[in-house]
Image (cartoon, rainbow, N blue to C red; front, side):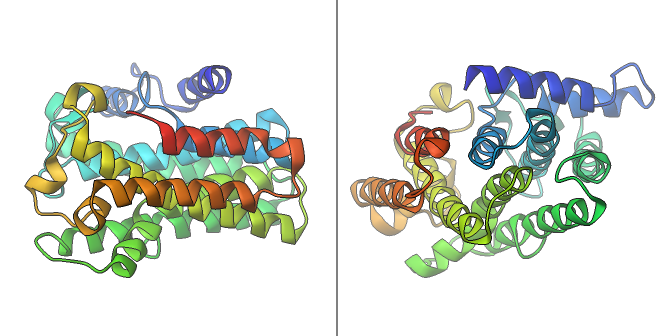
Length: 288
């Protein structure tokens, strides 16, 4: 993890505009939102899937940076007063607090477009047709049928009680779509049969849900200092979560079930999927 995180950090540093380049304040905000913080779970998944597919590390740099830029943009926008109105992210002030709301909005916009520029101009997946398909997959994961759609459902769900299927659908879009894209794009940098790609997609769907279940548990029983963001905010805002629907203990059991099923989805990959198995463990067993 440390090796890949350092590699991705260096690649992001190169991919982002230098802060000295005009407009300086916007570029400074973009770099503030991305660099020097975060677990880089999505890039780690892209690299792990790429390893299972025999992909070249330099191609994985491109897709790993792209999914992290999309993730960073979503955090910047989610924290805005018109969304979740949060003041702390990754242990430091959110972008709109450190800069201002307008700059934060533009920084998120610019990070999103930078992600697509990376994928479109990179060498990942070889020919232009394959790269175009990767752009399509990333766009779908980020749009109304993915992350943005899940956030829209989340905003309308405040103060309501959702059923478990409704909650699952929301998080398949809000959290799971970009996690699935991370695995899929990493795998497409190498060579896998269609059946193998399907198994990796199933694995990614399972750990995408598991990631959100664990996030909900941590929001309920971890401290703000540990999380690096405001703890207990979901409950305070009346948001439906796996904890509010299932309770803490059943939510923990569900995360463990999803972890077990994710391991089973990787049957047949043998040692090639070692990192994917380890990341499933990390996502479910993490404490921050």
